[in-house]
Length: 200
Figure 1 (spheres, rainbow, N blue to C red):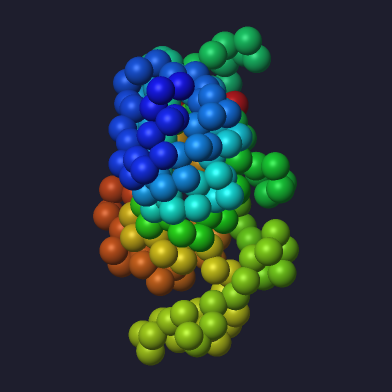
Figure 2 (cartoon, rainbow, N blue to C red):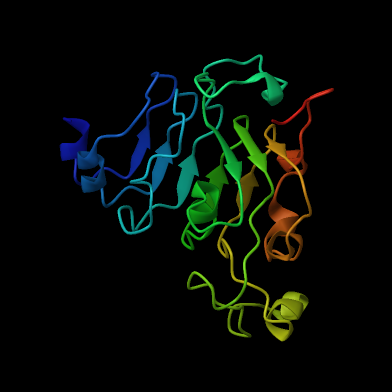
């Protein structure tokens, strides 16, 4: 609670503390620009992590949200098992990953090494307030985005890390044609990198 009173705080790292939730008063930190919550014990993405609560946030790190490091076969996980940040990513509006990907101001998003399964969300212009890239958004080298009205997802993101999860399915166009794709490190490795790894 005391940290939440630091209204001018811009950079906060609370990693490896075993956190399972964030207090509602956390939203008082309106000036936060960098938030590192990695290596904690979250079982879901905290609901308060939304753009309205943190309008200045540019970097969000939730990586390594695992209570156990050894689960390589999610088909053996039962409903009562608390293995860490585990959910199935779908196209539904209530998909917590989908909500993070709609955060336009984020320049860095790291949600690697968790237990997220399912497919990467796809987006359509006009749904969920998704806009298309315009000519004002892009330079000559990526005019394709504006010409083809590609969805504007994480448009400012210069670092996206989703590796060591359990994603399957197709790569969505918003990712394949992202304007900063060439800046993302090769280790993004979106799909499952575990030998004989298996989703539920």
